[in-house]
Amino acid sequence: MVKSYRKKPVVIEALQFDGNFNEIEKFVGGDAEFRQGELIVATLEGPLHASPKDYIIKGIKGEFYPCKPDIFEATYEPV
Image 1 (cartoon, rainbow, N blue to C red):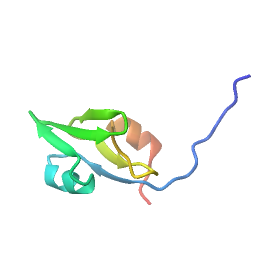
Image 2: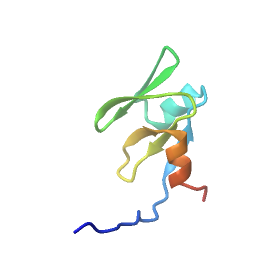
Image 3: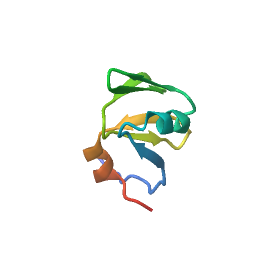
Image 4: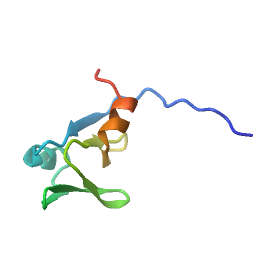
């Protein structure tokens, strides 16, 4: 049987990518590259591309990953 689940309220840290490569590189501990206008972030699943306006999220285990702005804004709110 299919059950419904609600996401636990978890506070995360995130930065929006808006050309601020140095700030993001510092945030992710150097695990990022900037190539041809795209940010490439090292994640647990391997390198992932982030476009301008994407958010870079620090997960609950200290991992980093990009998130599209519409998904981020539907999922998170400022604290």
